[in-house]
Length: 109
Image (cartoon, rainbow, N blue to C red; front, side):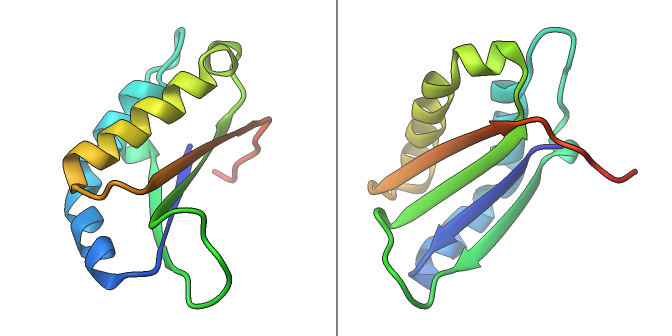
């Protein structure tokens, strides 16, 4: 189950992005589907985190954590760029950064 942490400072950016959540989950399910594994939007968890201190490199930062399937590893940079373009296009927010963190994951169910 991939997880997505969306970091923001401005509340108006959160409101824009929260309205996109159902479509973003569909988009990410398509982007992260690989091989025989087809993800559904219900398998993706999205969390919004308001950054009250520290420094950010963009107005919106996304950290996507998912299993390191070979097919994802080979196209991880393209996935990040496509997700970044999607967020920019759909939200109108231009300053966006995306990280895809791939690892061997465990889960509890």
